[in-house]
Image (tube, rainbow over all chains, first blue to last red; front, top):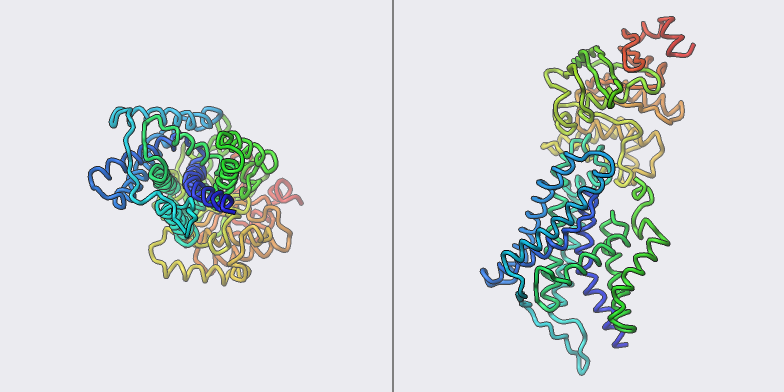
Length: 302
Length: 235
């Protein structure tokens, strides 16, 4: 029973961070039809910025939102400078489909090199602002710690804010319309290119939060070559694809499934299998339901 | 008034619209008819800013239609309903309508416009909470027109609203379009393959053939013209 509870808690904690990354990928995909491999790099950069801010301001609670804002600004900048230029110069055919993706790969390398140049290649340490020792009830200690609980509540709060913005506000309506049918949105008077940049900005903020929370909830160590961030990209991407790649609730659902399955493997079988199982899960879902859990078939075809 | 002069629009090497000129008086309904591939849709896309033109001019009042993107033209009172029931299926009926007025600063006026749309198409009012993909073909077309009207246009470009609809529904849509012209003070350019139906409600008619104007004039004159009748109206 205790093991099962641990599995659920580990699964949900991991899922909360995967879902931020997955949402980030979905937002970018919906606004520009690009799978952004640089998102791991952008999240890493935002986390380094968070580290720098903690060092200068001294407060994690101020550094976190500030790093999210700067992450949003950087992401918007990339869309504005890189993606718009690519779209302008390659409008048709295979190059148009491939060029942005290759560009994001290049950008990933560039960001990592830039981070190494500024902060060096040695580990830096982003300290957790809360205890990472699990709560104890009587003589039972669970895997959920104050830090872990904060991560979970913070992500849930962000999700609620995101869904209110998307479902209940004018900006949200413009974001959804531009994602589903850019031409109709344009004919309705929406400035679609601006909305696209906004989509990237929100993705940048979500990625920054994912990176920082993963780091403080984990070992706290950061390097430009961080394996954790590559895994974050891979798991976020798998969660997004399982969920349907174009649906925000789908991204959260995909992350939850992935988090729980991986936690179960880790606890009941072996931590060494986590990576293999993640990809098996991806292949299984793509085989049985190519459009993902909440994606539409029509959407995939288009 | 809408003035089009020596307009040429090309798809690669093909001139889909080849040096055409015509004008539409304010407050009139002009029907642009012609068979498949006559260049009707291309003309509409050029007028709304979706497609660039090769040469010529097109102006609405003193606004240059060949310069700027659709979202810019909407703010100048030009709305376009593109071919094939241009509604967003993933949104509700009301969201589709609200979309057309998002750019408007005055929210009260936007609300009043929505009431006008619900009066014009009561079915949309009854179904405002429903997802747009639950609507019938005719209702979708009403929604597409309603969405364009939400921008409170002075010039409305309609691309084949009758496409794929039953005759009775077409009749109803056409009557609504006439009503928009008569009582809401909107100038309409209506592109149609349903030539007879369109000319019957139109004030002015333009017959397009392979990108050129084959005939134009008062709609009633075109209907009466034996050459137009045999070549384009099928009797």
